[in-house]
Structures are given as C-alpha cells and as structure tokens.
Length: 233
Image (tube, rainbow, N blue to C red; front, side, top):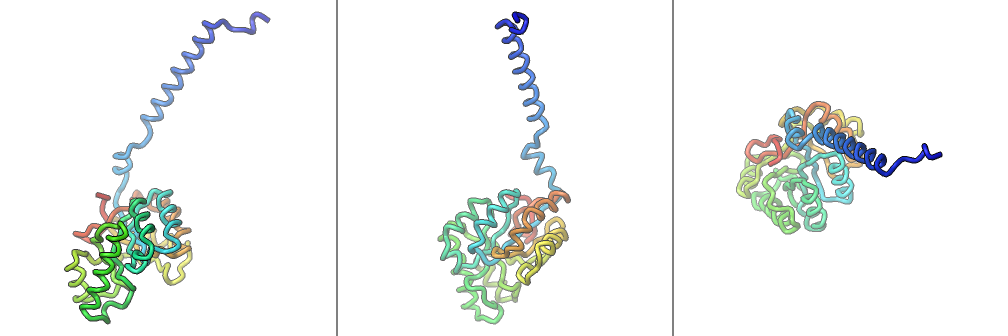
C-alpha cells in the first residue's frame, strides 16, 4: 500500500512539469493565433454592404447578426425613422456601422422641386445628427432615381451620391438563397443594395460572411471620394 502514495517532493515535481507544459502550449497557441494585422492582410479586397430604409423593428436583429459574423455595413437611414428611433441610430454607430442619408420620406426625388429635394436631404442630415449618428457623408436617392438637380443639392450638403453595383432584389421578395448568390457576385470595391427590414436578408447574413471570407473579401467602408468600398478608416 505504501507504494501507492507519492512523496510531497514527487507531487511538486509533477506539478512543475505540468505547469511548464501548459505554458508551452499556451505560448504556441498565441504564436499561431491570427493578429489584427494578419487578418487585415488576408483581405484581398473590400466590398460595401449597404442596408436601406432603417432604422426599423428589424434593426436590432440585423446589427446582432452583422456583429456575430464580423461584418460592418453602411446603413442608409430614412430621416423620418431616424427621428422616431434615435436609440437605434446610436445602436448602429455603437455596432461599428456607418450611417448614410436616404432622404426623409423616401419620395421620387426627380419629380420634386429643388426646394423640396433640399428639404428631404437637409432634414435627414439633421435627424441623423440629432440621433447621434454623426453627419452623413453618403447619400442614396430613393429607388436609385437621380438627376443633375438631385446630385447638385446632395453635393451642397457635402454628400456623395452612392448607388450600387449589385442589387440583391430583397425588396422584390428574393429568397435567402438568391440574396446569398447576389452577394457572391461582388468583386473588390463594389457595393450591394440590401434592406434593413428584410427577413430573408437577415437570414442570409451568416452565409454572406462565409462567402466573402472564402474569396478573401472583407466588408469595408464606402469612400466619399470614389464611391467604392475601401478598408475601414
């Protein structure tokens, strides 16, 4: 029976060996873990994920899905909804998103007077700023409808007009599979149109993230200078 017990010295020696081995394992793990700079280096290009018409009752779930999947996006908010839901605008910023201007009431701007266009844009700038979303630098005209007057008014407010390269068709009832396939057509620098309120788009987020990662693409910000997606500043 005496042989089944170990001396205190033997136990101490075993613990020291185990501690050393554990430390070595942790050191090796840390050495192989990707650093932030390594993750940035893995980006072969950047794409612009955009969501129109928020904030809405779906915004909180959308932000959660984006954060869980390591994605950032530009949220083109309607001024009327920003004014009514300032906490959601702040949540967008807290989640690392960028906030853009999508007019106040989502009208067909090309059918309005210059003064009416100015009101739609300026009130949205103010609503987003008042809600804590900062002063937008990007503007997306409703329906993608624009003309020289719309562009001129937007420019006077320091806004760059942003349309899109890929339309997810989520506004038209596209399925989750179709939305994922649309995102799969994105190439570096391009922008995709999606919507804050779409349940199918929300469901597509994890697969969009996987698809981008598989192609070494990362979700970036949209440059006010070029209108294309670039590395986050």
